[in-house]
Amino acid sequence: MAARIERALADQSMLIAESGTGTGKTYAYLVPALLSGKKVLISTGTRNLQDQLFHRDLPAVRDALAVSGKIALLKGRANYLCLHRLERADSEARFASRRDSELFVRVREWAARTRRGDISELAEVPEDAELWPWVTSTPENCLGSKCDRYNDCHVNQARREALAADVLVVNHHLFFADLALKEEGFGQLLPGVEAVIFDEAHQLPDVASNFFGLTVSAHQLVNLCRDTIAEELKEQSAVPGLQAAAEKMDKAVADLRLAFGREPQRGPWAMATARQGFRAALDDARARLTDLTNLLDQAAAKGTGLANCFRRASGYLDRFMMLCETPPPEYIPWFETSARGFLLRLTPLDVANPFRSCMADHPRSWIFTSATLAVDGNFDHFRQQLGLDEAETAIWASPFDYRRQALMYLPERLPEPSAPEFTERVLEAALPVLDASRGRAFLLFTSHRALKYAAEWLVGKLAYPLLVQGTAPRAELLDRFRALGNAVLLGTGSFWEGVDVRGEALSCVIIDKLPFATPDDPVLKARASAMEETGRNPFVDYQLPNAVIALKQGAGRLIRDEQDRGVLMLCDPRLLRKSYGKVFLASLPPMARTRAFPDVQNFFTQDTTDTTGRVDAATG
Ligand code: SF4
Image 1 (tube, protein in one colour):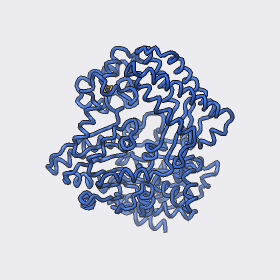
Image 2: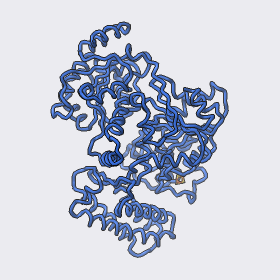
Image 3: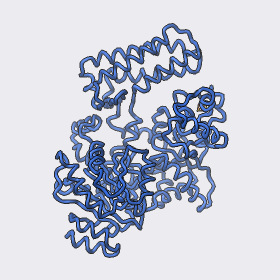
Image 4: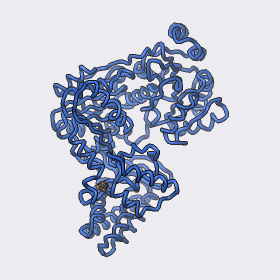
């Protein structure tokens, strides 16, 4: 893999490389990247992976190769201490709790000694602490070059180092924000870069969809109103009616939220506009936003705060207009509401075109790698989604001995997933498996509803500690899971990927259903009908491959190294009853397979050396 990547780096080509768990793919791209002497940008899926790469893997490989070359790490601005806001918080902030005040003291002490200002350095303050927004910046509240602390600002320092680095580590969100010149981006990462390597590349189509689209949210608009009032008090533009305009806008946002209907939902834009009274509320919000923007235009000269509000207001107004008028045909207009807020979105029908044009601006190497890119050995789906027509492809299978290390259990007599009793039947089938595995399991669900049902149903039925997603932050749940050593963790969404629990603490993964996206998802629906119009089959070309990749990710939690052993229980009977089930099975690692529960018991009791023979015999 390293040799292949070396070639792609040398001849500025495009390579899609699937690399199974345990192949050492990180080293396989770091070694040629560092030896190439080129300016390389590496983008990973999450900030944790960024940290791991920058603090652990990159220095290790650089030292082993004895090469020089500057390496740098760049995250989104919310990850850096803002010196200006820290000073302001010190003099003005009224923290909601005593705990926040105590944490603030720690932040202040750390601020005096940190070099990078990366908030992940301060592990004792949780990532989701309410304190962080007080001492970090947003594109909205950053004063930019007008800031007194501009020269020693951590965000700017990180950006300067990023531009000077030979190897720069970013994450996909930041990469696309930069490419699409969105809030976080500063539009300077890609020029000058000779090679881009994406790890966890399977996430790119979704991230790109978000960033090549447009969003206006109730949250943004309400914050704009609040900031306008606060800045007007401070900067005193004396533009008549400014404060009143902000208040009216605030009310119009609340009215617009009500016009969507009480229940949180998501749907195509047409569903909202068909509601009685919605158009009027929308027109009113647009008129209020126009008024506010015009007044802010007059006030902007009075100070940086008001100028900042004007810039934001005109941006929101442009997007609002695009949504309210006829949205461009290459976008899918849709909305999502929560109890109090709403998101108005325009998502591109297809990200291949915008992504292709970004890639075309300058010749460079593009490398896409992940453990889950191919569907039954085929890369067409990934290739089409991102428009990577000329890319070469290659697969490096996992070196693990799956037939010995893992057993796939497909229980018999489970109903169709649409049956009302499905989740209960899955749990009934899971109980003896959890006994056999002595806890040590993940139960991964495809919906929050099933997760909630399971969390209630399992109370009092398990002899092992039960951990449930949503009851504590994800990192804390995983720490507890590892420490307990016999826990059962119920998760959905984010627990399907990026979770690495090695060793015996995780010996069983149970998956309720094949992870097809909800068919009434507005983006999925619009993409499916666009595909039908061009004669393609959206199920085969889009829904199925996406679900296969998701299942590969979920199943991939089980075996993380050569010593791991475990059972993968897949409860969806469509795997064997439907013809497409074969595509899923062919895409998973080559595990021994059984439908008989005694094989599961044997697997957990017997010595690892004779697993294969006995299970294969039982499977027939
Ligand atoms: S330039 Fe922006 S991020 Fe930097 S210290 Fe000033 S306000 Fe904070």
